[in-house]
Length: 113
Length: 112
Image (tube, each protein chain N blue to C red):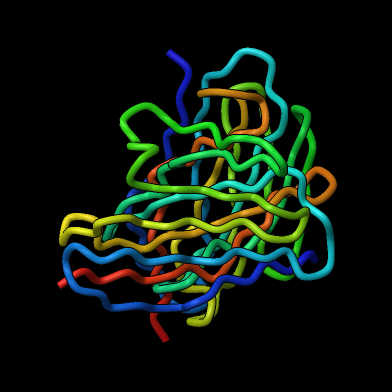
């Protein structure tokens, strides 16, 4: 199957700082990537849809100025959590669509202290 | 209201004890139903996609089936390494047809 990578796999940052998470499709091109957030013992919640070369589409309740998404190429999308706060601590997962299936990255554990 | 519901929330089986997980959905115009496996601290791993009622797919000890209202993930003679959370997802419930809406998952524990 298609491979999606994320970097870093985990990050700890101080409150008020910004953190960038990268999502790459390794063996295919993805015009659309998705960013999800998952809290402990909960399912995945879609945050935004990232479209190559255009602005991301955010789900209701997700602050676009706080969660900056850039999809600069067909293989890379980035999520930047700006001015992070402890409540932003979560597991962030990206995914990309290849053919008719959607493949997920391994996730990034963000802890804001 | 369109939605995806999984049951049970948690399931504990003895090794070799077969069972089934359920995913009920309500959506107009199903564009596929996806099953994923998620291990703790990892992203979901794709298992199956089903597109039409009556369709079945198998992979090792897992078999997924689909009706017009629900999908089942049958686990035959499970092993401890099958322990994980199993998620089903359906596109098109919220937002565009490309976006997946996930059920809450079934946490499966297989005891040796």
